[in-house]
Image (cartoon, rainbow, N blue to C red; front, side, top):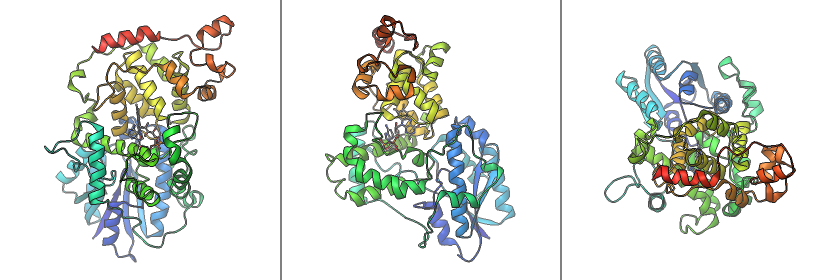
Length: 470
Ligand code: FAD
């Protein structure tokens, strides 16, 4: 007769509501059990990138080792899909006389259906919420509806936190051990956790380094300058925490708490430099609250109904050129190569390439959303869907349809010397700064044959997009 802890998208011990409550029920001297399902078939169905899966597995290993110190065995079970998870869990609960299953809720539609199914077959599942700072459903308009515009949502969000605070649980146990990746990984092995060689996430340290070094340094050295450099892709001016938030290795409440520890007045005035960064965290909250309010977004619906029936163009050659970074627009191509080579892309570039696919090529945003998901280490349905629908103007508080990023002027503005372009397109590395943003004339005049022709002409594509959207 014992409870079971079910880890899902919450691969952490710090500030984990389900773990916290579970741990309170335990007799510390007795062995306890936790479970995690590896469901590759389901994950592929959801387009999870190999690098993201690798990143999850590394964190799982570390988590298993961390839990073992506290006498909790993390059973890592491989089953195909959500249906198989429910069957396995049902049998496990019966065979082991499990009294309660504790877990943190997941936001996406299929995940929610799976949890409903668990309850239908009498799995004693209790859910907590671990993926947002303000509980979903709490920030509503005076008429009780979800905000459809970000700025009033943000104001209400800030007010909510000022009035109600936030619930930070910290670590469930007091005597924390010093953890490092090497010693943790040495303790756990197993085929299910074999990491990918081709799509290794090794460049991203485990979350312990983020909380110990990366975030403190970001607060100390970078957050003040975030406003000025956040849009420059050649500068490491952003925090880099998105992959950790996406798999739940890092708690968003922890992020707010540590930020407030450093900048206690941040919620009083939204003029501060630090607030610019918090503003992005609130965007993340906005998209999660939105998906909670509108589960249909999980099923590829346009937020704005009037775009649902749009007949997007599809040209395989154009789509492939976009995917492979061969559009002939250097900033777009460098961005796609960053994604393909590293599994991450700078936010400014996500906006530029998403705009290019949907407005210059008039290709369905869902194809871009899928491609991103298949390649991003931080792939996250709520933020990815939100970002794509924003860029394609089909979404909630989206970019108006007539705002079409010019990939050349974006390049001149945010990569003036072509530093970023040169890194990812070495073919162009020797071009003069001024020419690098759209080098075709220069290449022709100098009889160089280093780069692809442009797949569309910007001015015409812009006019076509305006007519199409209208
Ligand atoms: P920072 O600039 O340091 O910001 C801190 C945190 O705030 C981020 O980690 C993230 O959690 C949140 N954040 C920042 N910008 C946004 C935003 N525009 N929307 C929502 N949250 C934000 N983010 C993902 O986490 N997963 C995705 O799959 C994803 N897909 C995107 C697709 C498109 C088309 C666009 C335009 C944006 C997408 N984003 C996505 C948002 C954003 O690009 C990334 O969160 C950001 O680049 C991550 O880098 P960082 O952690 O250094 O961010």
